[in-house]
Structure formats: C-alpha cells, structure tokens
Image (cartoon, one colour):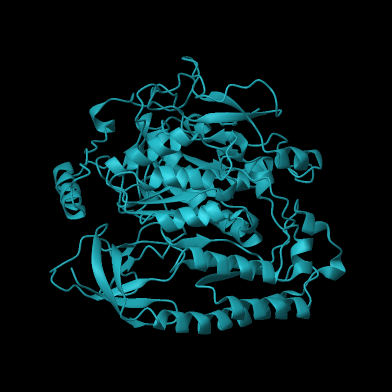
Length: 613
C-alpha cells in the first residue's frame, strides 16, 4: 500500500503554476527529482530556476546520515522564507524524498509551513501535491487552475539526432534550437534543480539566484520508444510474490483507468529472509508509516534531464536487501527491485537519440541487478546489451558490492571499449572484526585480491571506494589495519566518511561504551585523507603525457580563465577534475563535446590538459 499524501487547501494560484526544485543528496535522488519534474511538466506545470518566482517549491531531501538530515531541514526552512506570508510568491512547499520516509508525520507537525509530503515510493503523488491530475487538467477539487497538457505553452520541442552526426553537429543543433526558442522557458530552457546546494551567481543582477536552485545546462524529456504505453505513465509499484508462485514476468499490464500500474515479480530470497528478521522494520521511527516503498519508474515515465547535455543517469533498480548494520537505506527505499531489461534499453536508446553520449547506471547495489528477475550476472548481461548501442561513447555503473564483482562482470568491462574502465566498489573498512560487526564480511586480503584481479582482467582500470571511520568498536589496531590497506591498495579515488549513529540501524543499538569519541573519529579521517592525498599526488603525476578523450563540461567554477572536463575515468561530480588551459586549434570549446587532449601537468587530485583536436 502506498501512503496517502495529505494536502491542505489554500487560496488558488494562477494557471500553470511555476514550480522550483531543490534536489539534495545522491544521483539516485536526482533521478527521482527528474521524474517528478517530468510528471509535473507533462501535466501542465512550468519549471523555474528561481525560488523567488516559484509558486510551488519542491525540496527532494536526503536522510542517509545526520549531516544530510540537517542539510535537508535547513533547506526546507530556507525555502519556507519564499512563502507568500513571508513576502515571497510561493504558495505551497512540498517536501519529498528520504526525510519523508523517516519523519512523515513529524515534518508537517514541526514545520507547519510545509503543505504536502511525498515519499520515495510515491513519486506520482507529486501531481496531487501540485493540484494536477494525470490527464494534465486541473483537479476539480484542487485549489489550483491548471492549463491542460497540449497547450502551446506546455510543449517541449525535441530534435531527432542522427547516429551519424558528430558531437559538434549535435551541439550546433542544440545551439540553433535555443536561439529559436527565444524567451520560451520550456523549449531547452533552464530547469530548476540543484544537486548539491550550490548557489548560482546571477550576472544580470550581480547577486546569487536563490540558494539551492541552479540553472542547469540541459533540459530534455524522455518518453517511450515502444508506443504501447502512454507517454505519461507514472511508473510501477512492484508487489513482491513468493518464490515459486505462478507469476507472469512479462511487461506489466496497464489498466486504462489506472495512472500507476502494479507489477508482480519475485523478490530476492535474501530480502525475504531479512524481512522475516525485521531488516525493513520502521517500528522505532516516530512519524513514519509501516508501508515500504514499492515505486519504480520505467522508460515511459516522463523525465526532465538536469544533467549536462551529453550525460544522463539511468536508475536500473531501487531498494536494498543488504544487512549492513550502519545503514537505514532498506527502510527508506524498500526491498530490492530491478527494472525490466527491455525498459532500461529503451530508455538508453531514447537518451542517445536526444544527444546523450555518456550513461551512468545507478542503484543501491547495481551488482544485484536482475537477481529478482531470474538472471545470473544480470549486470554483465545488461552491460553487454547497452555497450553496443550506436551513438553511445561512455557507459559506467556505480555502487557495486565487493562479493558480487564477478569474473564475468570484469571480463565484460574489458571487452567493450564503450564501458569505462572504472569500478566503484565501497569497501567500508578493511578490518575483519569491524566488517563483521558491520554485517558486510570480507577482510583486507580478500579486498586486495579483488583489486588485483580487477587490475589484471581490466588493464588501466581505476578503483573508487569509500570507508567509514569511527564505527562502534573500531580500535586503534583496526584503524591501523585500514591505514595499511589503503597504503597497499593504492586506490585511485577514495572517500572517507565519519560514522553517523542512525536510529533504526542495528549499530545504533550497540553498547554506548563501544561508540568512538567524535574527536578520535575526526582525527582518523584527517589522517586517512592526508595519506590518500600522497597516494593520489603520485598517481596523478603518472598521467602527465597521456593522450585522452575528454568530455568538456564548460568554464571552471574556480576561475573563468580555465575550462573543465572529465575523462571516462572520472565519474560525474564526485572525482577530481581535468582543467583545460589551452584550446589548441579551437577558438572556443563546446560544452558536452568530446575532444582529444593531452595531460600536461598534475596536482593532488586534478590534472591540467591541452586540447589536441
């Protein structure tokens, strides 16, 4: 059952309300924001990048750790200041995402200016929050008067892109389109999403646009390539069945009167077993509902892209069944559920037709993909299918689980030039005792063997991982073991998180005497990052002289004298940068275009390149 969204009645607003979005947290949350934006736009709403112009502001929150919760609360309070009673234009504040799953009832009780909440399992409810119905007409019982979908003002004009066109030709097509669009905010216009609370300077008014709202470089829509489902299909609710039941695993049937369809498929046996032991229980959470999220978007779900023009994420699965004792994501996101492979391929084909050249696959654990659909090595099978799509330059996947990185997966990476030689595998620790308490398993030697195997099968592969310091019971000896592992492993990209004690996680209930003092936690993190800085500095020095394919992203945020780009060995947003100080034969560069370049100098985490061609 999907929890009911409660909406309070207020004074009506003008037709086609302007909606602004704030998207906090990870790329998985960003995709949810893109889906909600797509649903709203396809049903009559207008998107704006300016909080001061928005009549409805949606904050898609993160609640993974304490700092994320605090950022979410601070952002909500900041956006509340744009409400009409405080002198702004906003008539409605909608809070969505993980914070809602954790504190659904508490949010509106403690912040009464919030008018509606939308959980991670009910993205289609964003329409009710805005007073829209799936047909695109205003809800007769709603305080809003919305223009129907199909009016000239609500049309996005997309452009078919031939697979034979060069990236430069595609960029020129995009540029011409924007010039023709003029003042039309819908046709290739700025959308209204911030991924990481970055304010944007407004050169016209010499000030910052409202915090947490930034103009993005691309606005596109994806729909369906099949033609057998409505374009504004809001997604599926996955109802898990018992293994062995007679379940049709074909494409879910769509009831003509239903806005969201229900699809049945088996769950992973591990998930069923852990559910029986209370892994997904929310009983200790005041203000949360008992119902777990079941939602999963598909290729026919409207979606507004907010990533740079050439890049896009595809969420291939939702939820998580793992028992990690520090983590509450299973309670926030529900049981693991995979999208149909045909739906993922259709979405990828659609994105490529619209100029996307880099696709990054995401999920809570991408290496579990397809296990609930009966696949063995489902991720490798999916990669084989996607890697050969015409027009795709780079294909990457994030968030793997170490004991599920199989030989076949690595061999699949090695055999396709389009698959980035990039393995994101969060290890969390290297001490066997800490990993056991974390309920993850493994040890330093197992992980060193995995890294050596990956480097042997996939020449030139880069490894990204993350660790948690200060987990309850972590001794100085445990920390030293982690330190020694990092020295030996020579990880390319590494992040270190400080342990966050989260109510609902098993580690929260560990004895107080096992909890590591915060000062010790912070000291350990600083020491590890200093160690990694030395490793990275030496590693990046070896890049000098390499010729690379470089995806140019635009002017540097640090100085207008430099531009920035990424190689296939850099994931969006999270890794170091490639600064460009020499355009070579070009007078200017086109963001979203690939160039051949040479690395000319290196720094701790970043490198500098000159364009060759």
